[in-house]
Image (tube, rainbow, N blue to C red; front, side):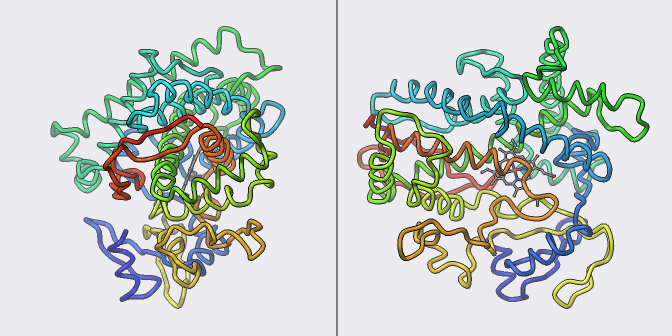
Length: 438
Ligand code: HEM
């Protein structure tokens, strides 16, 4: 993505390049992305075909589906997330309860160095488990450990050169051994895992009292039975559930791992966050979403972590479903489009100090929180992140709870290194950190 950034400096905000067999157009900067994804969103609503994804998802689910199927699945997922996220059955108490489990785990290290990667993955994935399965898992549960290991392994392989090879030469790769075959096996196992949960759900399913996403989906299957254009069936249910894990776990977990590192790197900012929480909330009660407005500095720090963390630097690819005119160029139908979010989150015309961690980007002169249009880590338009509101709730409740209970610092003699690796997300390299109880 740094490469794309340099190309934009030379060739302008819209340029094309060939990656393997595919011509792509890379879009840069806020005005261009807004024009393309929002104003002309109808032309960019589809995803390009990717042979490996096709092999895994068969065009089902939300992330890589298209057309009427995508529209139906997305609409259903959004309304169900609204119901469980913020409606009658809010996930807020579940997130706070998960934090208590996590805090116990971290307390166990007694301020000694530990690697947060796995713990945070467990915590965040358990929120998706609660949403879709209606229950969490103990971190030591063998089934859960297996599921977490599958996700980790498959994300690693999908972000590797093997998946690019597969997408460039699918017919050949199908016959050859290699990690791409392991991914396919992992997905079969993961689908079986969800299938077993689904079987349990059907045993005591009560349509009048949905416990979770699967229950709501079962009702939708019943409701739409017999409708010729309905895409609601059990195979799609399984794929949608997996999509929520894939899109909702690694993203939120990566952001929290950046948060710990930035707090360790800037102890004076961490202290200011803690002081604001102590002053406005105190140490004795748990935080709630209603507290957000009382914590402008903390909110600004969290936004800045997301801006500079830039965990989805190139968003996800789109494809033009018809010819479009953009910034003086004609882009033909069927061209893969890469929205370069980095070019917006680090644009020197949008941010005072784009390469410096500066919560002031989100504060006015009186210290009040200000929204910034160029803050688009969740992308924009019709394919805008489906879990944006859930992610914001998780990030706020987890981050503030961590700050209320712990102080993060690097192990003695070690400096926080903000190095990253670009896999499915742009994530910090694995590190150890100390969390001292406050
Ligand atoms: C798509 C970012 C958390 C579910 C996306 C996209 C981005 C993104 C950039 C691509 C949008 C596009 O194609 O234009 C993030 C970030 C997160 C986060 C930064 C957390 C910090 C979540 C969570 C969930 C979720 C918690 C669900 C539980 C999805 C889904 C899509 C998506 C299903 C595909 C939407 C579609 O194709 O219609 N996300 N995401 N995300 N996200 Fe997120």
